[in-house]
Image 1 (cartoon, rainbow, N blue to C red):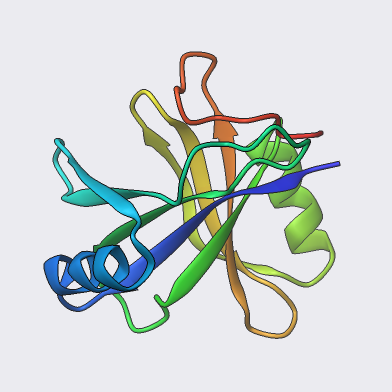
Image 2 (spheres, rainbow, N blue to C red; image 1 turned 30 degrees about the vertical axis):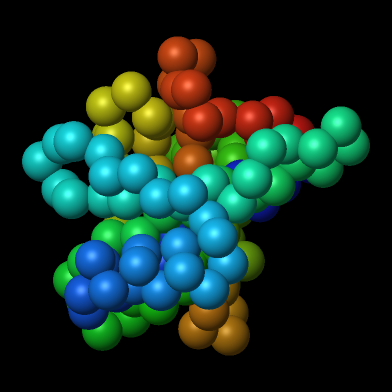
Length: 132
């Protein structure tokens, strides 16, 4: 069964937001180099439990619908896109390749909530078990 694997946090000022999370919760923040500025959030070492912490990241808000976007790991973005649309969901951002990470698609559920699905590439250092 697919699991939540990441939470994307949109911010009008990513530097301010990452400073807030680091100071309030003690999270470790590291900026990724790439064409789109993005900061990875580490909430701590994975405990010796079957449910390690979910990863997170902060990026500049680019569209009004962006807020906090939970990401669900799947084995096929294409297959899940068909299921999402068939059940009344809508695609917000079509399948997009993120080099070294995987393929991402952002959608709204039937209630207008925004989620993303990620089909990780084998070499994705952040990918956990998609559970699919």
